Amino acid sequence: MYKKLIKPLFDFCSAVIGFIILSPIFIVITICLLFSNKGKPFFFQKRPGKKERIFSIIKFKSMNDKKDTEGNLLPFEKRITKTGAFIRKYSLDEIPQLINVIKGDMSLVGPRPLLTEYLPLYNEDQKKRHNVKPGITGWAQVNGRNAISWKEKFSLDTWYVNNLSFSLDVKILLLTIKRVLKKEGVNSSDNLNMPLFKGN
Image 1: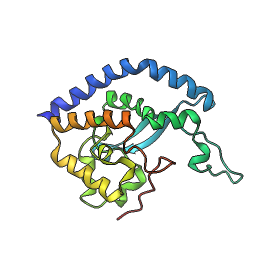
Image 2: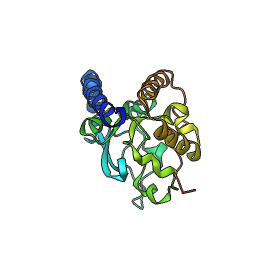
Image 3: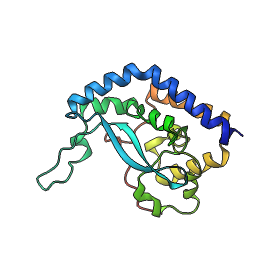
């Protein structure tokens, strides 16, 4: 009952309330990024959701689009803006995903939506992460986030899918708030990014 009825309702109501409360921060960051990113405050990317249905995830754009002489994007550390580094440090770049939750593409809690090119690389157990809606935060995020390996991350994702409950979701939300405030386990390195997943 929780998974099919209560969780979607809780997600929608919480996302609406959260977006209203965070709207002043949302507006300030949008204005700052309008200047630092030449009029492009948001980042849109196709990601797989529940049952591998593709949707467009919305995030604050933390990097510019500078390219080298051959037209290739510069490395992460040369494209991250000062505002972008700050909002990623405190996970503020995730705020626009509340819109994804309101639309029904995502949940507050669930496995993080990864790149579409990873879909053919999953084994049967890892594919279970798509049995539920992806989340803004998840069991893997509060247990290491980028500081753990892909194998550990997928193991935590599938464990969440198999043990999904209201009490677990509340625990993850509370741990997320704690880790964001204390900046625990947010980044594994200075560039804030996970290495690409290349299969098992």
